[in-house]
Length: 102
Image (cartoon, rainbow, N blue to C red):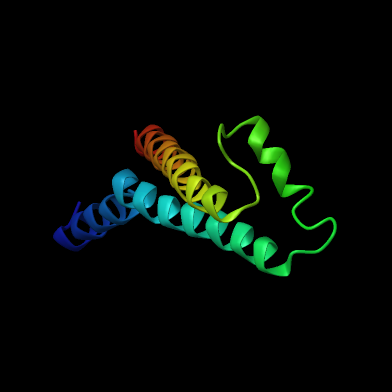
């Protein structure tokens, strides 16, 4: 194997990995801000049935409601859920990459 082929293999192995911690942080921010923004939009909209479907999240997220305090509770729950999902995706992806490279 020549040196250029070795370098190409090393680069492809390095680039194939995902930093699970960084992906978790990004997904946490997206999840938290996303749920906060959706809740805030529905509170501002304030129609008769505004937030009827989003209110169903209170079955899973204790303390969540389509209100201003609920928006902040949703920010925390969205961040935790998004972070956990992002971390899990990163870890699973890296394991699949490891198996394929063997």
